[in-house]
Amino acid sequence: MAREASRIAPPSGLRVNRQSAVPVHVQLQAQIRHLISTGSLKPGMQLPTVRQLAGFLRINRNTVARALADLHQDGFLESRQGTGTFVVQRPPHEGRAAQSLERLVEDALDRARRLGFTHEELLATIAARAPHGRTPRPVKIRALLIECNEPELSHYREQLEAELPLHVDRLLVEELQGRIAREPGLLKGYRVVITTFFHIHEVKQALPPGGPPVVALLSEANISTLLRLVELPEGTAVGLVCNSARGSQNLLSSIQSAGLAHLQPVLASADDDWSIDRMLEKTRTVVCSEQSVDRIRARMPLDVEVIIAHRRLDAGGVEMLRDLLFQLERDRS
Image 1 (cartoon, helix red, strand yellow):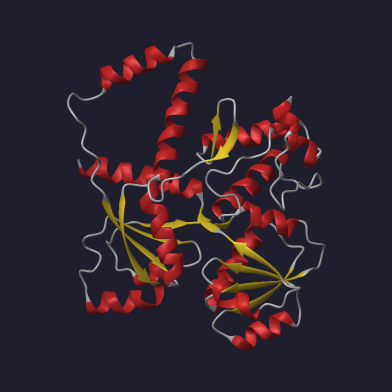
Image 2: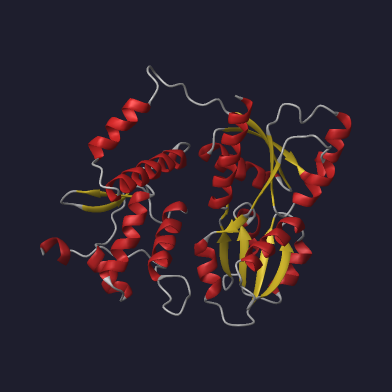
């Protein structure tokens, strides 16, 4: 009781929308993950208890417990016996890959338990099936990633190399046709070409027949961004800003694909001062990419709300790519 009385202030900006179609536990999970990813909740910081969070947000304790349990499983939080729940110190490069392995193990343990097997029986079966001696790490497959700007190329390459056995080279869409003309053997060393749905037609038209398979992945806005936009009234004008006009158009496509048709988009580009001024004449709510926020923040008046669009490659698409890589390696073997 003494520990419960010593209240820890809830993170600022934490709120839920009961009218939203997004389940409350998903809203809470996404917001806490966003606060951790952006540094508002720093490694080592302690979270309020389930009871405190439930009371602050006026929601069911089981809902809070479910959200925190998911964050524990994804590697964002840890429990310290007798102390509380804390933000973990996450590895900078291997965090996502380690989390994927942990989820794989948890899934296997859960399925074995539901089938009536003990953990010991599962471990014994794995040990019996595993090859003798040390298993070498899988050889990384060379892939070519094609996108419209350097910041997204770097961002998506980091995600792909963290989650898949890939060595990713990068190339801008606008350079693809010229490079192939100058270097006919450019694609010879690649097992797969990766792009987003925004550029799939451009990429396929530029590639010669008989080349490696082309995989298009969906680039999606982070759920915390979408939750904030869902709350805006019908007809609200919202500025959409990336480093380039093409990037802003892609950001618009991501938001439209999420079904947010109640907003009035106003596109602008961080490299075009006139478009920024025109946008600010029409709106005081601006969504911008992670890559452009530093370029535009100094130009934003104090009454403008800046929402950073943390975009990632869709998890389902990444898993589809994993299956394709496995198939390619099996066919080659």
